[in-house]
Structures are given as structure tokens and as C-alpha cells.
Image 1: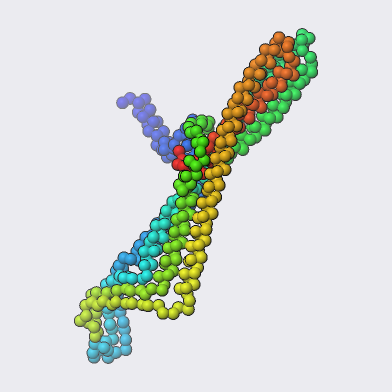
Image 2: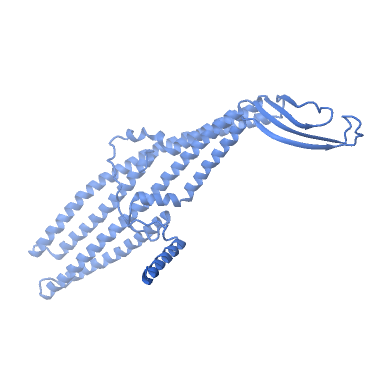
Length: 425
């Protein structure tokens, strides 16, 4: 290999190592256009709320492991060395009494407390998973609201810019017509006033677009946000409200409340186990022993402990657990009623938005046709410039109203799906 080839190879190798040290080679590339799903995936990775819910699931799994360990045998190794004031003349008066042994213990009965604790731990795990799913749904709604709000403001800004261009061209035309005596100066001033109003509205739309962009940047962690594309397909809303009310049991927050009620009921069983006796068996296997029991290699102890009087402590625990169980049941019933109300409200809003969007689509079509006809009539001197400006104003309002309701309908569509407990995309 010649000197040029060696120099080029060394340069390439150095560049690769340098890029690898900076982490360039491993950095993920941001897509050129983000969909709603892309934004949601980014928000999931960034959300502290979802991370906390994951840790709560791990916490519940740890409690289940602890409750399961209570029904398993325990094995330990014990070593002790006892010194006493003895003469050493017999096995009872030894100066040193060492002892090493393996200790085996097995609980036999404790009022079914362990099984109730295991059932409570399983229910808590399901509760935490449902709470995580509910948190993910709420995060999705936040992302969807910010996503469609930003899209709406961007489209609104584009429409205002287009109208501003039309008005600017119209003012130039009016000035030419005014110089020829075919238009009045008041027509030019009227058009300029409308242009100034459009510029003020553009500033307001630009401000709203910046706020929506910051919100989406906060949720996704991307700064700046690249272009957005609406690629999520929506289904027609069912004409029957019962189709959504029948899915209420699928809502994660309702399932979590039901599991929380079950956990509270198991806590009552755990508290009642304090009235039952405890039965345990313990065995020792001696590996080293001196003294009077030197020839005994093993022993087994059966222990039965029956509670007789504890000053009302167990009764108090049962009352407390029962009160908490009643609270959890009432909370479940309240969550269920709230869920039904949420579905009804979301259904009404979504249906209204769709109907309003269809009506505004017809309004926009009529406004476009009216503006086109007014322009033609103006060229034939059948109408004044004021009529054309009014038609343009009507077209602008119709476009902006349609855009607002169109994206509002999409946001309310996802609110309805979440309210009904349907799966996210």
C-alpha cells in the first residue's frame, strides 16, 4: 500500500474512533416527521410518572415474595460457645459448653394468614399494573392534545399567511385601479386595514403555536420538534352509546379500584387470623455438642400458641381493616359511577364535534364558492371591493373554524376511546 493509502486509512480509522468516543455512532436518528405514535413513544420513555408506576409494580412483586416465604421452611446454622463457673468434674459442670447445629422450622397453621397475604399481594400486583396502564392512557391524552393543538396552530398560521398574501396582491391591484380612476382610495384603505388585522392575528397564532410546541417538547424531550404528520386513522363513532358503556369494565382505573378493594378484603382476613392459634414445628440437627446432652444428635419441637387475651388489640385491628375495606368498596363504586359519566360526556362531545365538523365543511365549501363568485362579479363591476373583502373575511373565518373543529374532533375521538377503556394504538 502506498503512502496516500496509508494516510487515508489512518484518517478513516481515527475518525471512527473519535466518533465512537463521542457516542455519535450509537445516537438514534430523529425521524424527519413525527406521528402521534412517535410522540407517545418518546413521552413514555421520558415520563417520571410511568417510571414510578413501574417501581410500584416491582414493590408489589417484592411483597408477594415476602408473603410467599412465610409458608416455606426456614433453615439456619447456629453456633454458640458457653463459658461457666464449673469445676469440670461432670457433664453438668463443664467450664466450656460449645454447640453447633442446623435449625429447621416450618409453620403449620397460623389462621390462613399467609394465604390471605399472598392473595392480597397478587391483587396488589394487578392493581399496580392497572394503575400503570391508566397513567399511560392519561399520558397519551396529554400527548394527543398537544400534538393536535400544535398541528391546528400550524395549519391556522399557514391559512393566515395565505390570506395575507392574497390581501397583499389585492392591495397592489387596487392601487393600480385607483391610479386609473377605476377604484376609490377608500377601497385601498379598507383592504389595508383588513391586512393589518390579519397580521395581528398571525402574531397571535404564532404565539399560540410556540406555546403548543413547548408543551410537546416538554412531553417528548425533543427540542426543537421536527415536522408533524397525522398518520393515525380514526374510526366512525358508533351511533349507540351502549356500545361504549358496555366497555366500562375494561377501564384500567376501574380495574385498579376493584383490585384495591380485594386487597382491603384480604387485609381483613389477615387481621382475623389473630384470633386463631399458631402451630409451628422446629427441628435441630446437632453437629457439635458437649455436656449432659452430648449424645443427642437431633430433636423436634411442636409448638402451639393460642391467644387468650390481648387487651382488644386483635379486635381493633379487625375493625380498622373492615373500615378500610368498606372505604375501598365505596371508592370502587364511586370510580365506576365516574367512569360511566366520563363515557357519556366524552361520547356527547365527540358526536357534537363530528356533526359540527360536517356542518362547517359545507360552510367552507359555500364560502369558497361565494368568494370565487364575488371576484368574478367585481371584475365585471357588478359588486364593490367591500363585498369582495367581506367574502374573503367569511372564507377566512370558515377555514379557521373548520380547522379548529377538525382537530378538536380528533382529540375528542381519543378521549372517547380512553374513557371507554379501549386499547391505545
